[in-house]
Structures are given as C-alpha cells and as structure tokens.
Length: 83
Image 1 (spheres, rainbow, N blue to C red):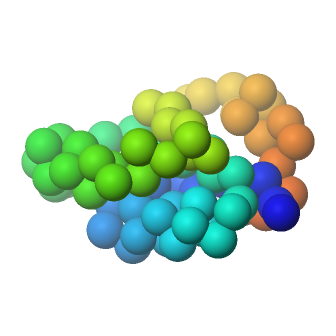
Image 2: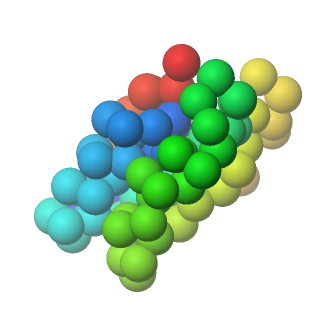
C-alpha cells in the first residue's frame, strides 16, 4: 500500500478522497490551511470520519509558507486538491 499526501484534505473532495484511500488500506497524510473562504466548522465536520482511521494523520499546514520536507518524507503519491 502507498503513503499518500492529500492537500486540501478538509475540503469536500479532499476529505472524501482521504476516506476512500484509508478504506482501501493506504496511509494518508492530510493537510489543510483552513483558509476562511468556508467556515472552519464545515471543514472540521468534513474530517470527522477520516480522523477516526488509524492510517490517517492530519496537519494544519499552509502550503504557501510551510517547510513541506517533513510532511513529504516517505510519501509515494501526492493528491493536490488545495485551492
């Protein structure tokens, strides 16, 4: 199984992709900056199910400013859904 990075993981599409990937047995690292275009509570709700999965970790990260090397270490596939 692959180690996958999903950017925009708290969004509708990103959270559903993370749910599917974890259900298929992949390890998923989700990142999102919670930029306030949508209410934070809505994005938190999107993560409720996937956060219960042992093969999912979440990091609040802003792609524009963060050092991504630690997050990318060991990643096989990147799904870039952040907008």
